[in-house]
Length: 150
View (tube, rainbow, N blue to C red):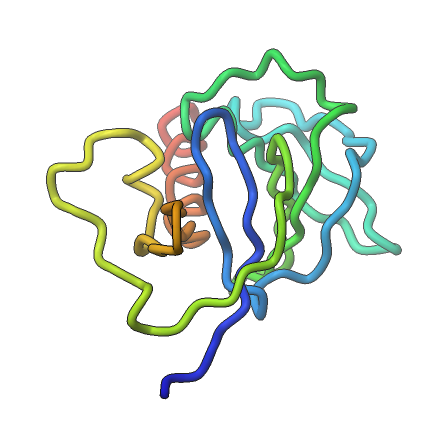
């Protein structure tokens, strides 16, 4: 029997997604964010997380989802990255789900949505499918948009 890995399930627009729990530092209600001049549109700014300055990325903008839900009604997931913590704004954190290796499937090549471009794999659970977010792809895309804007 394979080892179960907990995942933090969340929603961004119409997409149901997940992150492996070991990469999640914490979940926050909407946090006050200080805008940064000339930042890419997906970068909302920075937050002060107990004295540490953390960049905040709006996943809704990265995925082309609606941003009609006011920021004060969103949630944030703080994740680990090689460059330090990163705060990801999502519409809703749903639950923690356990998954084993057999439930993690490759993303089909024919997937054409923005969400699929940021997916590391697909988590097939009973009655639902979650896209497992590849945070490194989000970071690379934000860095790429920052370079092209400069």
